[in-house]
Image (cartoon, rainbow, N blue to C red):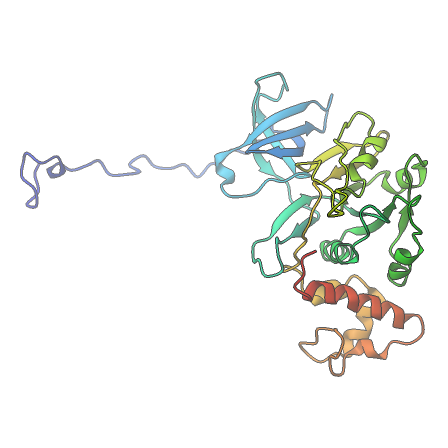
Length: 330
C-alpha cells in the first residue's frame, strides 16, 4: 500500500513493520546460580576476578550489557555467569555488582567535577611516604587522610626509608590527629606492618618512588611488582605499577597496590564529611552557625572553643581542611 507522500516506486511508500511488535516480558533473570567473585584488577574492559569459593580460581570476565554504564572497579564483589573455569581463552560475564561498603574516590584536580573511584570495599587506607629520596610531601598525605575519613576508612601512615632521615618531624604533624603509624627501613622486619594489615582490606597509596612496590614484594613474595628508582634531578619516582591490583596476604587479609600518584583532587569532599570523622571536634561544631566551614577565620565557629590538647587537634584538622580548599592537587 502506497502513501500519498511517495510514489509506488519509492521504497518509502511501503509501510514498515512496527518496532517492538513482540511483547517484552517483565521477567528478568535472577542469576541464582551466578558465581561470587572479587575483582582483582581491570585492564581495557577486561576484569580479572578471583572466585571466593572453592579453589579460588582466577577468571577473566567482561561486563554484561544490562549493567550499562555502571562502573566496575578493583575490590568490587561481583557475580559471574558463563565460563568460570579460568582456562586459557575462557571468558565469563559479570552480571551483578554487590552493594559497596566503602568507596575511595578522588578527582584529577580540585575543580574537576568528575569523580574517579580508585577501589571499593576496602576498610583501611595505608598512606606510604618516604622520609627521604624523595622528600616527604605533606600535601598528599593530608589529602589522602581527608579521602580516607570521607570514605569511612581507617587511616594508617607508613614511613619508609627511616635509615635515611629522622621520622620525628613527620610524626609530630599527625600525632594530634591520632593517626596510627609504622616506621620502616630497607631490610627491616615488617612484623608490625603485617599485624596492622591482618584481617583487613588495605589500599596502599603514595607518590612514585616511596617504596610501595618494595613493601608489596616483601608482604606478598610472589607478587613481583616492579620496583623503580627516583630521578636524581627532579626527586620524583617513575610509575612502576600501572594498574591497581588486589593481592591476598599470606594468612589473612588483602592489600591493593595502586599506581604512584602525582595529584589527588578532593572536589567531592564536603567540610561536614571531614569533621564527622573526629567525634570530639564534631561535638564542638554543634554551636556553629549555618554554613560554617570550620576553617580559620570563620566567625563564631565552635572549634574556637577548644581547650587543652584539643587545640592541637583543631589546628591539625584545619590544616587538613585547608589542603582540600587550597586548589593544589598534590
